[in-house]
Figure (cartoon, each protein chain N blue to C red):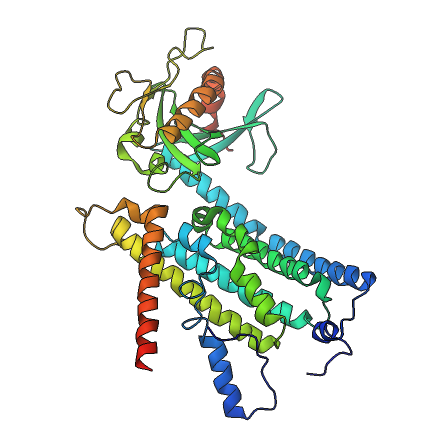
Length: 218
Length: 236
């Protein structure tokens, strides 16, 4: 795993900065994927990914909170004393979690019911606090938002990977649309917590195998 | 970007500590901005949230009272039953359903109780014509996916609530046969609920809250049936 807290040097040539920004944006999706590589924020990944809709809603809610809190934390980073740094970050994160909770209730009451307490628990999600502490508190607003977007996208993709497999095998549907006809008997284990661990393990196997193959090639 | 005289990185490097006042001010300002944001979000979304909740409840009422096309909310305050607006405060709520002809189809009543995980909230529909429960839906549940949540999906369990008998005694003060839970495939009487195999605790929770709630609500509904029936012909 590479270091992730190197501030962008404003003096670099334009191309180099562009490449560096692209790297900031994309590393959360692949090389430093929060779920499949860093194993962060697994609680909602295991708990609410029993359907594609729930997985997508959880991913988007997390991305929203990540981007907004990273933006604010990067803005105020120079004025927050280090002694109250974490408390201030939690306050900012809790604010946006509350906002997203209201928004979700206003947009889709059904999805909000399905996600239950896991939206409120985003306050203590280690991906969000981790990016705030490791990146947003040391980098510019633009870079912090790019980093948050990348990690949010990585988390959303991970949730969708989990939710797709679990819903297809567990109920024979994808986002509610039946795939195998009325005679399909779903594998109930897939929508239970045990199935979540099994699917996560399978995705980790795939990611590790891909990483090992890439390392072997290089 | 121009740097302010001292930022947290510099402070950490030089070992300079922030003053207590500066810490309080920082957290106070962040708290104030947070409060403004949260209250703004609440005010912007409160109306759509209220609409969504009302639509969800209305859909649930139509589901538990088959044939219903219109509902009127009745509230009990100080022992008096009368039609109320949805946002009017009251002690208990009863949702009366009516068909297109304005005839009372039944009364939907909320019940709540402890489930396997957290509180379960349900809505059931009572039809005075057959003196029975004709529908039940879960409003709020955190039951285990695939097991406890079968109370929402299991067709055999749901069929318990198609005609669950609630006969009253002659004085309309007591239910003759309170609802009881029986083991799967052992239902013999129309006031029994057949439990779900593998979700006994959730099934029992539903049966217990229905037993307790019907003992209080159904005699009250029967004694005030005239008021509910008139609602369909009023302008309310």
